[in-house]
Image (tube, rainbow, N blue to C red; front, side):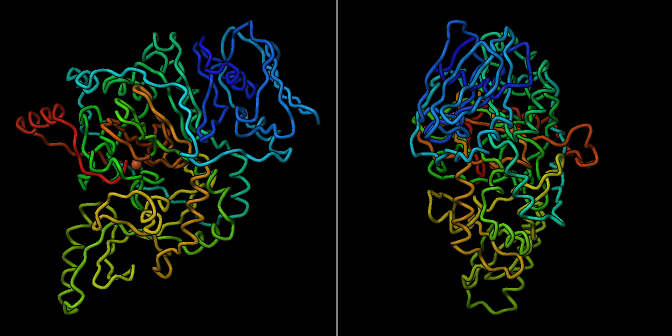
Length: 532
Ligand SMILES: [Fe+2]
């Protein structure tokens, strides 16, 4: 068993551990935030020599504060926290078999003492803990094993499950506050890596359980997922059934390996300076149930941290007045702009509108309405999605969470951060009832509440972020150099077959098409997309 550095951090992992997801391997629990706010999870300590470790404020997990209470940590005892007016003591039992656990009771027991969550936005400071794991040469990482079944005829991305009627926003915020707000982290030990695929087979149920609870899982240090084939083995071991990208019909995102159901992320050099804000992989019409983002090569010259934020945490954080306002008024999102000379006669403009509508809407499979000058720009024709409620019940848990793409799509936010999207692809968020763009004040509150809960992951080759797409939002920071990340989308499970629909992609390929597609897998990766 390996300790994180510094070793004292490790102690906190099991502080939260009461129940026990004890595995045959070293899955461990998330516990600490570094100064930039990203959580790190640590392995359960087993070192018998560790006794008591002092800890300063800067090393505390986000849910603990030692501003007034010094913390003392003891090991080799049953895990529990004792809070007195003088100090907080965390006692941890040493186990032969490491446990993974985050126990919300720990958060609550401390939060109930009135401690503030200590989080700051990314870029306030960054201390990498675990860097420069070697990846595979890119030709090995992207090798397509043609002996495996071809998954090209995968499911269509399922229809979005909207369920937002009758939500009591204040009550929903209170409930959301009680939910786990952190990415669950699992670090691989040497033994885990030696198990390969078997690790995911053995721990499937527990991993799926933690995913439902936390909304995202960061797998770190796994050798298996350093390649397309390993990534596929991982998701197949977890019982995840791939589906098409929600915008597949637009062709915006290309496959990295079609037969493995793996798409490219936004690696294109021209978009390396583009900040991708928080979003769910969804449109008002289609939404992937889960996603697995894999790092095959991190940015060669720095940056490119993957961003993830909990939709429950954002809902709990958001100003209640604004949450109610947006819940009641709903939002609409425009996804493209076409600027027509304002001087064109009305009849011609209407003709253009009809033509564009007929051409664009089917291509994007999005139920778009063509509307002139919604954002106030003369002559501008915008493709606008249907109204949607930004607070939606999670399909499985039934708990309302923040579920929308306003943080990424708001024009006012995009204009104020690095953005490489051309005008035609610029998005905007409107109040659905009046079709007015949301105000800067409202956009800024969405930004504040969202970014407070961003966990920025410095992913290394083999790392995977597994996301519950109805619960957690994701994005990507700017980067320098070359980067190669990929993603697979997943539909609903066997238990939710009615949610996945009956649509499978129709793939009719001639021998020539197959040959071309096969060649595409080997070509340098370059693609057009405005989302990760
Ligand atoms: Fe995305």
